Every structure is written in C-alpha cells, then in structure tokens.
Image 1 (cartoon, helix red, strand yellow):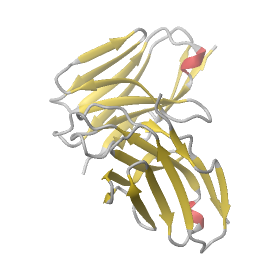
Image 2: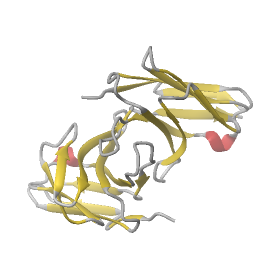
Image 3: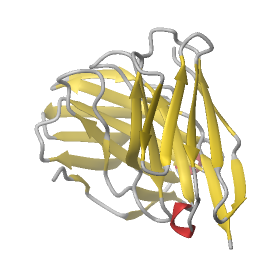
Image 4: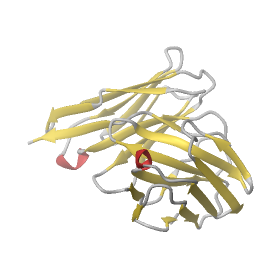
Length: 114
Length: 112
C-alpha cells in the first residue's frame, strides 16, 4: 500500500519566516509533486520532480523552491512566507513505467501565515 | 502548457439521479485522463481513468468518456448515493515523466 506522508498536518508561521514542508513516499516513485489547493482554484501545481535533483516549475512557482536530494523525499520551501501563501499544500507521487499511472496524495498540510 | 477546464464548479442532484461533470484540455498531446474524488477533510484519490486509445470506460456506477477530436472528457455517475458527495477533479498528462494538470474541481452534492 503506497504511503505518502507529509510532515505536518497544520502549521502556523509568521510573515517573513522560512518554511519547510516535507514529503516522504515509500514506494520508490520517480515523480513527486507539490500542489496548492485553494477554494475555487482547485489543485495548482507549484513544482514537480521526475528524478533526484531534478525539478521543474509548475504553474505557480513564485515564492517557492524545492529540494529533492533523495528519491523518497521532496521538500517545498517558502523562502519568506507571506499571508497569500496561507493554503492547503498537497504532496503527491507517481510511478513511471508508463504515462498512465495514478498519483498518490499525502494527507495535506494546512499552512497559515500570520 | 496544458490547461484543463472543468464544469460545473458546483452540482446538486437528487439521490438516485445521474451526475455529469465535463472537462476540456488544451494540449492535443495529452493522452492520460484520471479522475480524483476528494471527500471532506481527506486526500484526493483516483476513482477512474482513461487513456487516449479508449473512447469510454465503465466501472460499476462510474463511467468516463473521451473525445480526442474535441479534446473533451466527462465523468458520469449513475444512481447517485449520499456517499458520492465530494469534490471531483479531472486531470490530464502526456508523458510518463510529465506533470499532471488538474481542473478546478466540482463540488457534488447529493440531495436526499
């Protein structure tokens, strides 16, 4: 059973803080994703990684960076948190034998920036 | 890049009736179209998917249709039940190491 685990369920941070959101998957998946979920806007892709140390920008990368030093771990970094980054953050991973494989999601991290 | 449009944003149907959610995509190279269901407070989970070489796929009360010419795919839920109440997301991707782009979601309410 695939498990995608995000380090925190809820986080409260102050404006200007550097914030790390961690995601770990235990199924040796190549692809890992970070999405942001906001009401009415659905799931928007921030960054994704298709291999260790490889990353690509998604649709809304501004204000974020990522790190993938190991295959199982994909970190999302908010360099200087702002109130408009208050959101639900979802990590996902998928296997890559072919294109048609599902993404498995973590339970989400609800981040509040005050 | 790929853009996925999803309609409607909210849908209310009487229990036992059918529900249809529609999505369009922009990149003709997309060839995999999954649908996810997200129940309140839970993570999105895959419920059905379709590949570009297939026009229709059915799994019990859920079916998905794909029209590649029109770049349009739809989710059909028949005989709706209370547990079908959730947010549904469509998505599209094209290569095995490519990103998955989601629609904005449809909140489905099943009315008693």
